[in-house]
Amino acid sequence: MKNQKLVMIPGPTPTVRSITNEMGRETVAFGDPEFIKDFKELVIDLKNLLKVDGECFVVAGTGTMAMEMAVANVTKRDDNILIVSNGFFGDRFIDLCQRKGLNVDVLQAPWGEVISAETIENKLKEKNYAAITVTHVDTATGARAPIEEIGKVIKNFPDTVYIVDGVAATAGEREYVDDMGIDILFTGSQKAFGVAPGLAILWAGQKALNRRKSLGIIPEFYIDFEKWIPIMNDPSKYFATPAVNLIWALKESVRIIKEEGIENRYDRHKRVSDAINASLEAIGFEILAKEEFRCNTLSNVLYPEGINDAEFRKILAEEGAMVAGGLAAYAGKMFRIGHMGNIDDHTVYSTIAAIERTMIKLGYEYEKGIGLKTLLEKMPVDALAF
Ligand SMILES: *Cc1c(COP(=O)(O)O)cnc(C)c1O
Image (cartoon, rainbow, N blue to C red; front, side, top):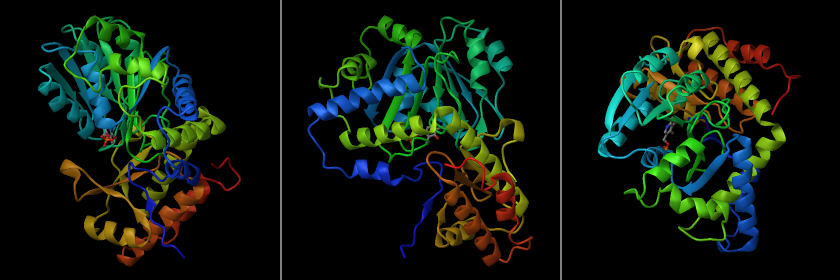
């Protein structure tokens, strides 16, 4: 038997067979009429899925490139930008924006918590911000920002472009661009879309597109909206080579999402997340994010007394599941487990079983089997499964 390793890190996430098959297809010319048709349909589907009256960009690159693309197209040197940081990936915007010559203000939440819409509203009243960035789910903490409430606040600030980093959220956490007042949303293919790494996907509404137009020529070239808009509307045109196989893979991912139904998908993520958290807590772990802030796409899990991080993750990998370590102050104290994308119930059970085997091997004293028992209670076998 193949010793399968479950990729339970917060991205890349496991790829299902039909998506892997698209990546393994023989590559065609980007001018191939079949491919042009596929690409065009994909862009339209992505706009409909996240409900934007604007543009959707599918560009080779990672989530970090999408962060840069978002900022580059709506700000110019010396503009004010407000960065709402709930952890490591929120902080990443600070350096990115300082290098661009922006005046950066930061609202920083303690790890595991988030900044409220009210705090943001008060800050926005202080000066004129060209843009604000909010990380929907910070992968380092597993805390989820109230993006819809924040969107309502920002409606009263017509000069401020609302940028949401959805990299650990989009297609797993409820997001609708226009309805939530979001101006730019972006993600990477390897997170909740369940495709291999390599594509940045970015949605831009009318407010963001108008801002881009008002800036004239911008210093950035590859990530300029204006360069890509003609391509996204007519992929028979060329600007830079599209990642043909990843575009097919993303198209298959979108087909799966449409088949499941995006609302069902959001509900499934919540069900799986609640079950995994309850199960880990029953074993004796603690979840970093307070219940009211917890996201549905990953869990950041604190070890019980006496469990060594490196040893735990090494044995867990031998037992068939890869998880990620904690970041910054939580390195060595925590592990991070992704449960987003196209993971099925079987994968969830296998992961918890591997964690229980690991704890038993480490000589941890607890009620053996309680993790799996909790899963059976929280994810009954007769309930809707993926
Ligand atoms: C993973 C991640 C990123 C960075 O994406 P890369 O594809 O690794 O560049 C940015 N923001 C969040 C919230 C993430 O989870």
